[in-house]
Length: 279
Image (cartoon, rainbow, N blue to C red; front, side):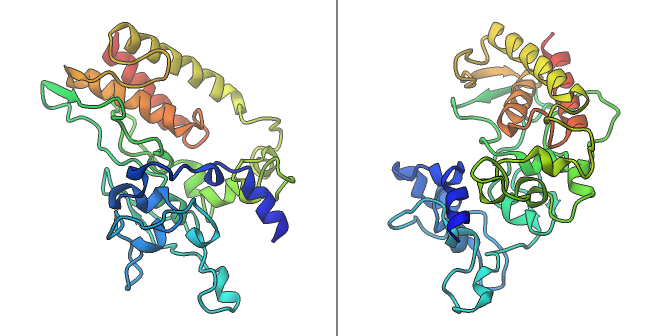
């Protein structure tokens, strides 16, 4: 227990900010507070998209968010809050990856991409986009603008060849407080079963190539006044719908934060579609 607490202390979950009022609202509190996910689990085991009420006395994400702590006072208390398959909010696709379903409840896009059949699209806020956590969508290979690509989006091998997806890769054997376990920091050692010669996450140079494409898309978006250079925020305005979709793709890849590790083929498809739309 002490080791788990030490690992958790360096995680991003432990650093969650619940000080702002909107973090505890019914819409946001379902993921941004410790009580939110348990509040969303219905009596039949299904999970609602939002909490039924605003969260009273919000706490940071903690053990009780993901585990049935102090419910029965037996070993059943280590059970997960839910591992039911997840219907993704922005696309309606089903994410079903065992224990990884618990992660997907919050780590998914909240907003759908622009409708490119319309002439224009209005970006209404500097916080517009998939909403900072589209990892489940990326792993599943859905929800982005693929342009004229003839390659159908497909789930990542990290989804199709593992039992628990996110948990398999992010919660391997802990290396103290450095990686693995409840740090949720991926450990390169955990990759060796499939990538025997891996020394970092830039396997076959994929991350380097994707960073280069991401930089190109950003430069074009900044030059066209659609993105701020300093903090990667979208600039509100009405744009050609295909260019708005390119902006969405940039935010999707940037906010996924894996530089392609979650789904390299799909990531490159999204960035190439964005480049084609902006050039």
